[in-house]
Amino acid sequence: MTATRVNGGHSLIYKNLLTRLERADIAFSATHLDLSLNETGEAGVPFFGRIYRVSGKGGRRTDGRGFSDAVGSVLIHSILKASWSRPEGTFVTFSRLAGPVFKPGSYSQSALESPIIKRFQDRVSNLVAVAESVGGRRDGQAGLGAASLIVDLLAHIPLPFIFYDRDEAFPARTTLLFDRNATQVVDFEVLAVLVTLFVQCLANVSAGVAEKTRKLDLYRRDSRPRGRSP
Image: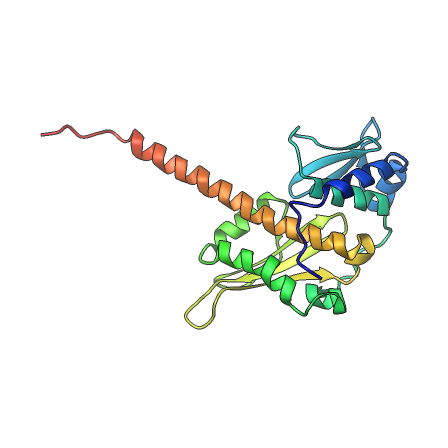
C-alpha cells in the first residue's frame, strides 16, 4: 500500500460522504462520541486546537476559516461511524497496528517520523509549544533533550509520541504510538490520513511561528534608535 496522500484525491470521497451525511442522525452520533450539540443540532468536533461544527448540511469551522476535503472527510467519517469504542490503554506502533497492510516501518518512517525529526531536531521547546497550540499536552517526564506528548487526533483517538533530540551519540528520533482500539473508532485508512494531517499540522504551525518570529525580529531591528553619523 502506498503512502497516504492528503492533499489530493479526497474531493470525490468528500462529496460522497456529504451525501451520506444528509441522512445521518447527528444527535445519535454525538451521543456515541461524547460530542456536544448546539441549539441548531450541530455536533462540536474538537480537531487540532479548533472546534468544527458538523450537521446534516456539512461541516464548518467556528472561526469561519475553510478546510481541506481531507479534513472534512475524516470528520464526517467519524460522525458516520459513530463508534461506541473507547481507548483500551494499550499502545502500539503504526506498523504493528497495520499488520501486513504496510511494509513494516516504511510508511511510519517516511511520512510520519522523518518530517517531525527534520523539523524539530535541536528545537524541542518549539515542538512542545506547537503541539500544545494544536491541543496536545505533556505526558510525563521524558528527560533532558526529549519531550513526551499526547494529542487527541479525534474523540477517543489518543496519539502519544515521544521525541528525543540528537546528541553526540545518537541522531534525533521519535516514536508515535496508537491505541489498539483506534481502528474501532475510525477505519484504518482514515486513521492513516488523520495522523498524516497531524504531522503536516505540526510542520505548518511551526513554519508560521518561525515566520512571525522573523518578522518581529526585523521590526525590532528596524525600530532601534539610529546613532548619528560622525
